[in-house]
Image (cartoon, rainbow, N blue to C red; front, side):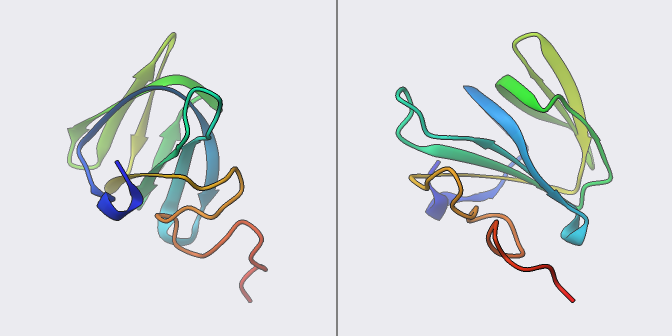
Length: 116
């Protein structure tokens, strides 16, 4: 999915490697990212908003997400399982570089100064 097609989803499936990339209390946002590599010319960002609870490994080999309740998502991959309690799931795929800001994550780029 390209960034222009980003939107809310109830499920997602990928065999790529993902990392727990960023979390902020502001808007309760959790960002998972699969970066570009020799086998993948794009990066994939998975964003959960209004997050209440997280039970995930820091690195994930494969990512299968299924909505199992009004604000509950079951996540699994190769040799791992977890869950996220959140209100919204969105996914975007683009050609951004390793540290480019996510098109989904509210609050700006990685190097923004802290809010006062």
